[in-house]
Amino acid sequence: MSTAGTRRAAIALTLAGLLGLVALYWMVFFWVPTEVNQGVVQRIFYVHVPAAWTSFLAIGFAALASGMYLWLRDERLDRAAMCAIEGGLVFATLVLTTGPLWGKIAWGTYWTWEPRLTLTLLLWFIFLGYFMVRNATEDPEKGKRFAAVVAIVGALDIPFIHLSVIWFRSLHPEPVVARPDGPTLPGDMLITLLFGVLVFTTLFFGLFLFRYAVEGLRSESDLRARSAA
Amino acid sequence: MTTYWKQVWVIIWKDLVLEIRSRERIASMAAFAVLAGVLFNFSIDTTTTRTQDVAAGLIWMTLVFGGLIGVGRTFQLEAEDGAFQGVLMSPAPKDAIFLAKTAANFVLLYAMSLLVLGVFAVFFGLEVGSNFPWVALVLGVGALGFVALGTLFAAVSTGTNMGETLLPVLLFPLLVPMVIYGVGTTTRLIAGRPFDEVEANVRMLGAFALAAVAAGAVLFRYVVED
Image (tube, rainbow over the protein chains, first blue to last red):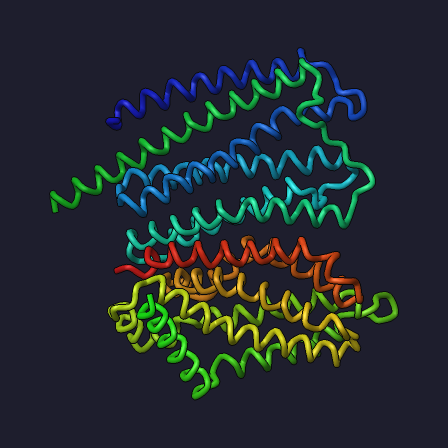
C-alpha cells in the first residue's frame, strides 16, 4: 500500500475508533447495569480488559512481523513490528494504570500479584527492552535484528510466564478475588465488553497505521536526503 | 551429523580450556556466590524469619545474579580480541556455535549453583538430605534455561553500545517462569517433601529450558550475522 493509501486507511480507522470510543463511554456510563458486588467502579472493566487484549494482540502481531522480517528482510515488516510494539506499550500502560485504580477499591490494594496484572507488567518490560535494544546500536540494521529477536522470544515466553504466575498465585491465595468471569457475564455487560474490544482493536490499528505511515515518510525522506547529498 | 557434534565439542573445549587457564569468570562467580551468602545472612532477621524457609529463594537469586556475571561476559573476551569473527567464519554452523557457547556456560553456571547450594547449606544450616539428587536436578534444569536465554541475549547486549548493562533488562522479565518454578520446587524439596509433589513443576521447568535452547539455536544466527 502506498503511504497516501495507508494514511487514508489510518484516518478512517482512527475516526471509526474514536466514534466507537464515544459510543463505548456512553454505554459504560449510562447503559450497562451496575455490577452488584463492586458497584460503579466495576465500569472501568470495559476499558481495562479491551486495553489488555490489545496489548497482547500487539506483541503477537509484532512477533509475527519480526519473524517475517528476519526471514524476508523487508523494511516494511520491521516498521510494522516497531509500530505495533509502540501501540502495545501505550495500551499496556493503560492496563497498568486502570488496574491499580480498580484494584484499590475492589481489592483494597493498589498492587496485587494477580496473574494477569503481573503478566501485563512483564509484557510492559518486554516492550521497553525492545526499544532499548533498538536504540542502543550504531548500525540501525543491527538494532532492527536485535529488536526482532527480543519480540519473538518475548512472545514465546508469554505462555510460560502466564502458566507460572497462575501457579505462583495458587500458592498465595488472596482473600478476595473480585473478577468477573467471561462466560458468566450477564448479557448487557458482555455486549459492552465485546464492543469495547472491537473499539480498542480498531483504534489500535488506526494509530498503528498512522505510525506506520509516519515511519514510511521518514524512510522516504531519508532516502531523498541521501540521494541529494 | 558427527561433524556437527565435533564442531560443537571443539568450541566447548576451547571455551573451557580458556576458562580453566584464565579463571576469569569462574573465580568471580565463585567469590560472588560465597559473598552473596554472607550478605544474605545479614539481610535476614532471624528473630522474625527462619532462614531455612527463605533459603531456596536466596539460592535462586544468587544463581540469577551470579549467572549474569558469568554469562554476560560470554562474548566479551573474544569481542575484545576480535577473535569472535574467527569463530563465526569457521565452517561450524551458527546454531552449533550457540549450542557450544550455551553448553560451556552451563558447565560454569551449574558448577556455581552446586557451590551455592553447598555454601548456603553450611551458612543457613539446610538439611537437604535424601532430596539432594532432586535439588541438584532442579538446579541443573533451571541453569540450562538460564544459560540458553542468557547466551542469546549476551550476544545481543555485546553487540549494542550499552553492553552488559542491557542484559538484566532483557533477561529478567523472561526469567520469571524459571524463578517461580525453580524456587517453588526447591523450597519444597529442601523442606523434605517427596519429589512426586513437585514433578509437574520440574517438567514445566524442563519445557521452559528446552524451549529456550531451541529458540536460541534458531535465532542466534540473526544476532551474530554481519
